[in-house]
Structure formats: structure tokens, C-alpha cells
Image (cartoon, rainbow, N blue to C red):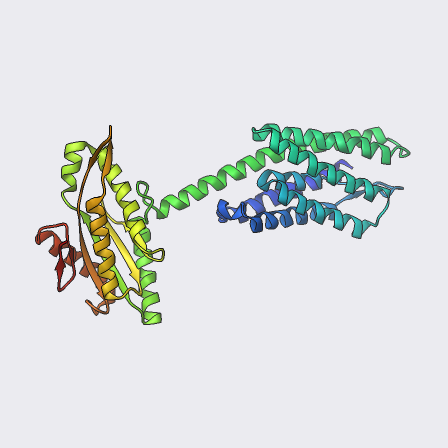
Length: 365
């Protein structure tokens, strides 16, 4: 029997790593939605079914032994009560359909109900994850072992069967916890590295590398749909003076809050990136010329009026210069739109700063 139970343990290990690999690209905000929790519950149910496919039929009885309760524990660990209920229902239905309704089946359904209730209480009362897992394993065995003993009371060597099941389940519980923690930690690091590879660490905007990718995708989209594309190049006026006067930590605060102003005053579909020290770039899709300049002027005015908190109830004000290029209105060369906007930014700087300039006009408000 030990060999058969260890097949269940190996299946648990394999499923843990496969599920972890699948979930690593799924944002946590999706997993915590109702839809995400139902999907996790279905996955746990399928895992329980897989463990029951390799179940152990105790000779001369209707009792089967496996580690399906770990499937319910795992989804409880990942998603809480909703996926736990979903997986419990799926496992219970499969148990009744495949092996028939008998005293062992009724006992199994009763066990599943107890697992769901106990796991939910533990999740509510206990904070530390390792304590939750330990208690869930312990309570599961406290529920299972007496029921197994009762169902197999007329079987020879029932004490040995129960003892072997206890040993394997205890080993599997400890191993599974460390595997789950490892997979969870690895996935968290993967998400952090993935985010850091596309976002600027200070402002949370797209970094230069990712912005260039977005720019190339924008070219394809505009050419395919024969649409418009507007580009802002934005530079903080006299930013070196801010750093020299107040220090780089204050300069970082200015950059972060400027990123907030840009996102607030642009549309949701617009792409905002930090492409240099104090230089930012914005892409606007299908934005008419008048609206493009209106958004640029809105940003310019919002920055000028904003009080940047430098601590101790002190505030400073800054201004930005903005260069604007619009395809096909102000430039016919789509792939040079960023360079055209950069030339317009240079024009804004030379014209006195704190203004919005295109290839033909400069606006100072």
C-alpha cells in the first residue's frame, strides 16, 4: 500500500509545479475575483479526481484510500472558501458517480463537508500560513483516521493500514507545504522581475525599452487602421536646479508626482513612459489635432499649478516644456514621429520654456 500512496504523493508534486507554472502569468488581482476563484476551485476538483484515478481499493471492502483531501487544502491555501467549496463539490460528485453510493461514499462526502467547514474556520482564526497548513493537516488526519479504522475494522492488519496512511499523509503534508511556499515565492519574484522589466522603478510608467516596444506596436496599429497617432515629448524646465537646490531625493518626489499628473490628465488608452532622467513621452491614439493640443496644454497648466510637497509643509512649483507631433497632420513620416516631437520640444525650450510647441505653432498660457 505504501507504494500506491507514494504515487499519490508524486502526483501532488507534479500538479503543484504544473499549476504554479500556469498561474505565474496570471495577475493576483484576477485570481481573487469570483471568476478566478471558481477556476481555481475547478482546478482543485480536477486534481482530486486525478488522485482518485490512482486510488487504492482495500480488498474485500468498498473503501478507497488516497490523498484527495490535499487537493481541497491546496485550493483553500490559494483562494479561500469559494474554491474550497467548488473543489469539494466536484470531488464529491466524482466519488459518488464512479464508485457508487454506499456507506464509504457517504463517509467520504461527510469528510469533504467537514474539511470545508474546518478549513474555513482555520483561515478565519489563524494568520500564519504555516500554522494554517499544520492545523489543516492535523485536523484532516483526525477526521480521516478514525473513519478509515471504522470502515476497515474487519480487515486484517487495519492498524498497520492506518499507521501507513498516517505516515504518508504526514510526509506529503510537510512536503506539499514547502513546495507551495517555494512555488508561491518563485511566482512572486517572477511577477516582480516581469514588472520591473517593463516599468520604470521610480514612477511606475513604462521604461524606455518597453515604451519603444509600445511605439512599434502603435506604428503597426495606426498603419493597419489608417488612424492618427500623436506624440508628446515632455521635459521638466531647469530640473538640474531642483536637484542642486533641494537634493536628488526631492527630485525623485517631483518625478513621481509628475508621473501622476501625466496619467491623470491623459486618457486611459494613452501610453505614458519615462524615457530619460526628466524626460517623458506620451502616445495618443486617434486623437484629433485640436484635442491633442488641448491635452498638452492641460498637462502644461496642471504642472504649473501643482504644488510639489518637499516636506515640512513646504511646496515648490515647476514647469514643463512639451513638444507635439501628430501623424498625419504635422508629419507624414510615422516612424519619425518621436523625433519630430523631440524637435518641437527643442523649439519650446528655445522659445522660453513652459509652453507647448508643434512644428508650426508655440502656445504659452
